[in-house]
Image (cartoon, rainbow, N blue to C red; front, side, top):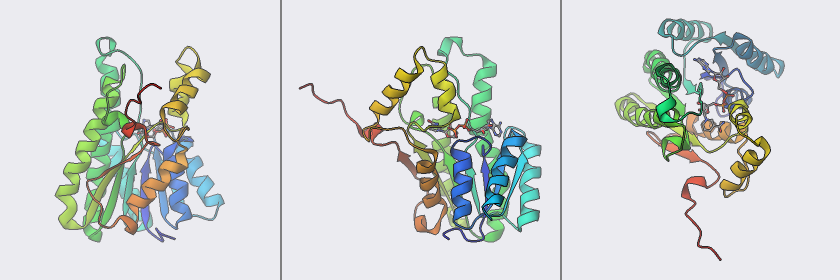
Length: 260
Ligand SMILES: NC(=O)c1ccc[n+]([C@@H]2O[C@H](COP(=O)([O-])OP(=O)(O)OC[C@H]3O[C@@H](n4cnc5c(N)ncnc54)[C@H](O)[C@@H]3O)[C@@H](O)[C@H]2O)c1
């Protein structure tokens, strides 16, 4: 019960991906969970699954790009649950396109969801955390914010920006007892990955190559990443702030091996 009676808002919580896993993992640890997603059905399903296990949760339709919607939903949660202690920004979108073929609309969609959304939800939970004199914010970044990838310029830029936002907010809010960290996952088995694989010529082969590039020899489960978010949201990481915790099965530390 590491999060007993703490109120956690999780964005991007309506698919079978990382956001829902975070909600369910936090609820197992006693948190009261607010699942936000652009899909109302998805957010409600997440909340219903938690309620079915005896947990306390609500699911709300929220587009993280829309400040009025974000503000309204955060207020609704604070009223219903009496405050906000934890926020995890999981909402994210990606698509594959070369930089010269990227449209302004495509660029904006990615930057607005992944990065501006993180700013907007943070902006509106911070006053509640300030009131509590404590809080934990966890942004779901990515190894693509650390390394370069072809045909992912907007996505890489959004995640690199998210890591920088994490560090800046951590410094600004440390004096108020609010910690801000990020998780940078490697490849995770979620709908976003399924969409990516479906766009390749041979999805099975592409999946196998994703498994191979992680030294641990597999793709992460959403629960692997939820466990890292749990650590960063809980008091077990009380002296950790401004950190981007890489959870990638060894991918980013894997140098080129000499050929035998
Ligand atoms: N799956 C991976 O390999 C991987 C790796 C590194 C980082 N990530 C990051 O993890 C996060 C979660 O991704 P996932 O893999 O679970 O993918 P996912 O597609 O399953 O989940 C993303 C969720 O965000 C929601 N969403 C999209 N736009 C939104 C908006 N404007 N407002 C509110 N919700 C919105 C979607 O409806 C969906 O439920 C994303 O930020 C993603 O970039 C994923």
